[in-house]
Length: 384
Image 1 (spheres, rainbow, N blue to C red):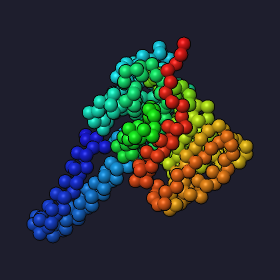
Image 2: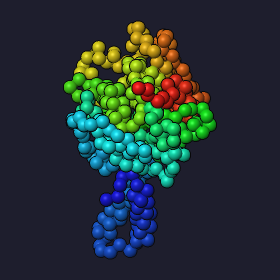
Image 3: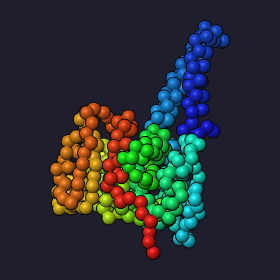
């Protein structure tokens, strides 16, 4: 079977759609059999053409938005690791390929990784990050900057940034559609950002459920996964600073990034929310996130936390547009900004126009990555 995210699949479906239309037109008056049989064949041909056209459009839309990464995800099936045993510390080879251990595994090169030279372009690898504390696991991507492979940096620890998708996005969004590594290369070469490691994941580690970065009572511990497990797993595989991470995300991922900085600023002192929310929605995709507890819900409402005296030593950059409405629009951004008190710093990037879409977020990446770099500690070489 052709992969769901496959240009070949799209070409095959489009070709079949065209062939069915052409065949229907050419054979319309040549259908064999009595009149009822001919009518039935024509109806079947028309329906088949409609089905193929809809399927082609659906595959094209998924290819653009990466809502589902495989047939198994589309059908609601996904392998999940419930627990991880401890093993010896990981040794990281010069090419960035790790030995299994510490709860993580490097699976190989990332898709869409053109023949790059690591010491010039950096390198993106596919990783599996099974969380020991949460029992959740995700397959994502880690981008290592060129300096990671250059002489003189062999013992350097780099700042890391957790980059999260919206829902129901896939981690491949961050590679193919947004191409965050390319934006990082751009700002590094321009001298507006320093080297950093990008850890790219989808925001729903219990997919297809939308967990909204919440530790669900008697359910998926999504916040624990992103706030504790991911940094621990990545630090076991690569030379990254154990604390002082950044977080960045779009939509649901933007809310999660802000929440990480507001509630766990020691590990995540800086975050960027691209059209992020101030509080998680509850709908058919989320289910009951808080077990009916108003108190737990309030703890995930960022505006409520800031208005009731919570003021972490962190920095946020919130982006939106003047034409965006709803929970990620200008009013929501200004509400969160007004609720903030020192030492929390809230900066904003407000575009004149744009929507809740990749086409709005992609041009913002150089600016927000430069901002993140300026709010993270630079690479360091441990002493002792």
